[in-house]
Image (cartoon, rainbow, N blue to C red; front, side, top):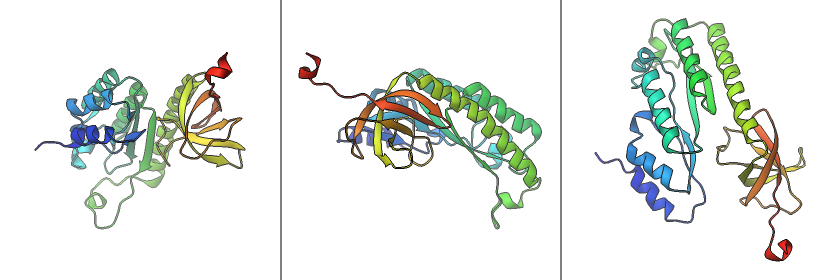
Length: 240
C-alpha cells in the first residue's frame, strides 16, 4: 500500500508551521521518498526520532522487529549523507530476556561507532501477562541496572561532544518562557524535542515572549543544556 507520510508532510509544509518534527519513525518504514521530503522541506526540522530498541538481530526477532547492526548502520549513514545537519534520537532497552554479554557489547560498539546524538535507555521490565515476561533467560536486576549505567555513560560523552561543537555558533531558539531559578530565558533548538532533550538558557536585553523564535549565540554548555546570549536584531537605522 502507498505510504502517505511524505504526501502529508508536503501538505503541512504548505501551511503556516515554522517547525515540523517527526517522532517514532520505524526504521524499516523510512523510504527514499520520505528522506527526500525531509531533506528538501525547510519547515521539517532535521531531527528524527527512530526507536531502534536494540541492534542484536536475535533479540530484535524475539521482539518481532526487523533490523540489526548492519541494517541500522546503513540507514544512519544514508540519512546523514542526504540530510545535512541531521540530529538523531533513539530509544534502547537493555537487559531483555536472554541478552548475552556479547549482544550487549555489540550494542555498545554500535553506539560508539554511530555517535547518535540523543539516546534514551531503559531497563527491561516484565509486565505480567505479556509474552516477554514469560520468556526464559530473565536477567538479574543488578545486571540490568549496570548495563543501563554503562550506556548512559557512553551517551554522556557523545552528548558532551555534540554540545561543545555548538559553542561559538548561532542557533535558532524557540523561547518557552523565563526561568526564575536561572534568571534567564529558556528555550529549545531544532535539536531538542520537548520533555526528552536539553534546553538553551539565554540572556536577552529585550523581552522575549513564549513562542518567539530568536537567534542565540551559544557560549557554553552544562550536562544536556546549552547557554548563550540572544543576538539582538538590528535595523537599517542601527547599522548606519
